[in-house]
Amino acid sequence: MNRPEQPPDPVPDVILERRASRRTVWTLPNIITVVRISFTPVIALLPFIEGYWPKLICFVVFIIAAVSDVFDGYLARSRGQVSDLGKLLDPIADKLLLFATLIPIYWISRTRHDLYDIPVWGSIPLWVCLLLIGRELAMTGFRWYAQRKGVVIAAGNEGKLKAVFQNIFIGAIMLWFAFRDARRPLGWETSRFADFWNTFHGTFVTVVLFIAAILTIYSFAVYMYRYRRLISERLR
Image (cartoon, rainbow, N blue to C red; front, top):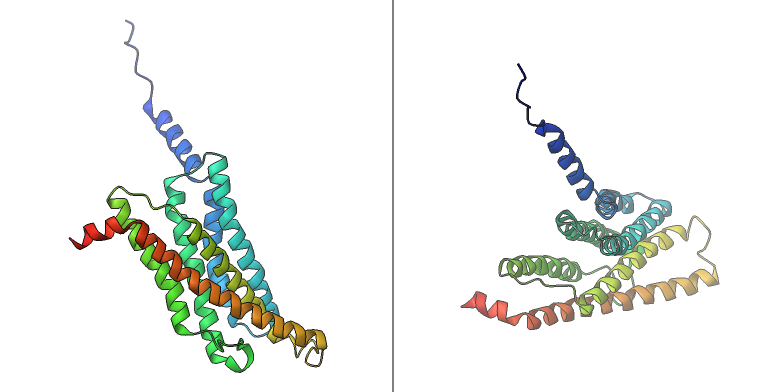
């Protein structure tokens, strides 16, 4: 007696779907973003180690992390690999990187202001750190609220320019810490070039920090004005 044909086992199909889903989630852009997140503890801890080498390594790692932020976005768009996970992880990585750099910068510049002071500003003011961090947190909350209303707030040119100067400032101040630590061990205290570089680098950090602070306020104001209808709806 012939037995009726059994339907194919659905388990292999389920396994194949799960594997395909994993391949979709763990794309190269998402892996780069995860690696960038893993860099944040390293960047946060290295500046506290004595000597110029840890701070120089921190500068290099930060540059890699900052460049990877641009690179993974380009890869995701060019390869059609924009994913929900990437949209979730990318802003988290940006915020963690900002915290991992600004907190050590503020703490070190305050506790060792005799060594790391920059012209005009002196040690990095607390209000500047709060301004940079507060703007990011406020924009994150505003984007979340806008998304609930069905509005996607894309990054504008003002915000992108702010991010560029913010990263330039962070990289420059890290290199400033390394340079100031290196002067005595490398015998640069009486070097004319070192004196010139000390003035040039300190002035550069001062100007870039001022521009970053102005752009932080300006870009936030532009976003608020551009999406003022959402704010007016919230206040009703």
